Length: 206
Image (cartoon, rainbow, N blue to C red):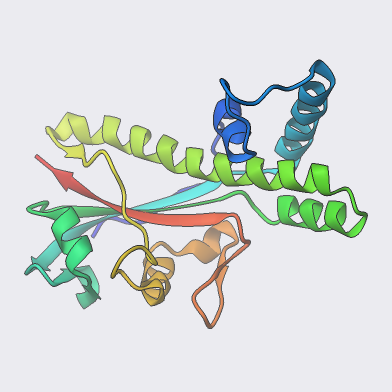
């Protein structure tokens, strides 16, 4: 198993279109006044000032994939037919994690406490989309390295809590990725903290 790749700072352009879409604005059906867009853009910029994206990634050999269970290094066994089918014949897996940090969650709580719900909602959407975009960036970054070996990542990713891949598997993912090094903890019911934190698994194939 390769060592965990810790990225203390991920710099990406904000995905404005996705943020607006998450907020419920649709280009052909939702009309925004110039003032509404100005205010929303301002809230997005404010939110970005509170976000510090960090990430981690781990490349692991798949020791067994029998259609029902996926076993990786350290004898970590994930019981999931859907994950097994997703990874298929991939000989390796890539585990990834990304977080927007705790400051943005404190800012959202502060806006909510002060009844500035418009700002809180935009902050929340911005943090969610930035965290997802950080995973996109990680995949692109690591894919460029893998191509030197004649390998590629699967184009999609799979997360704990989806389908029959139980949320409790988040515990082993958190441990393997050493997510405490990027300030991420996990609760007794397998929820990652800070809230705007995501993990995912994808396959590596030749």
